Image (cartoon, rainbow, N blue to C red; front, top):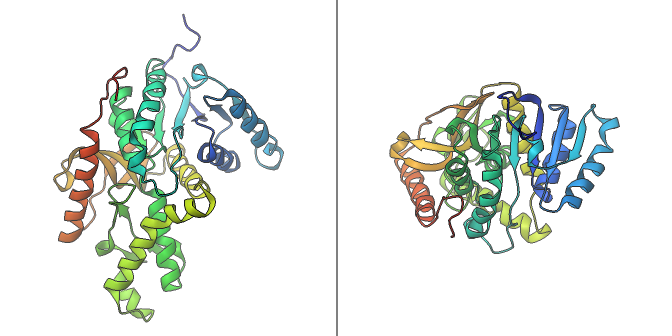
Length: 328
């Protein structure tokens, strides 16, 4: 019997990180500090890179909580509660997330079958871009149930939106309740119609703070959120700290079974008329992954933009081959 044969048990204190680039290593560092896990295995095509990151991050354990951090192989992920995939080509300046499709789907065709054949029982958390397409790819190639395949989606975009609104209104961003939905990319939608600040409608709260040009302000804020990754990449070549914190938050919700509502990427089945496409909508997330998607109020314009976002993703999906050995 292979030593990686799955017994059906998961270690809720173990996480696996596949990909040790900027995002993977920053996420691993964030998870080390979180205290959520007592064991973390790092996997990378460059074994020395994984070993180096494990050593470097591991040296910080005396300042945090006891944790075993090591470089390993796919044989070491079998009992991981969460398998995080950050592996893939990086987004370059002037390159959209969708431009990464061909390269990163090909990479996933080498990763996901390795996970699937080990009958892993944990949750797949996809972080690589384009995250919606790759979450769909992971779902098709893994054979996992849909609730166990989650994309980081617009969790970070939503945090960026809250930051922008918090600064605009001079209020704690944690009191802002608003979502970015749809594609994690250029067709994303800022769902302002249902946004509020501690229960007060966004437009009303804006006026309380002396802001009356609602359409102009919200449009500018939505553009800044959408372009923030491009801005960061143009200045420092990559984004990784923000997404690392988003990864930590998603893991926290799963491990603690918080049943928090996060705008993660998951398969759509009829909500707003959308089917067979993975994109971000608020969802209740807990120890079993996505429990249910949460419909939020959208005005007619937002619904049209959401359908257009889904159509953009579907157009890309229809051009891909999801057989494990198929060529692109």
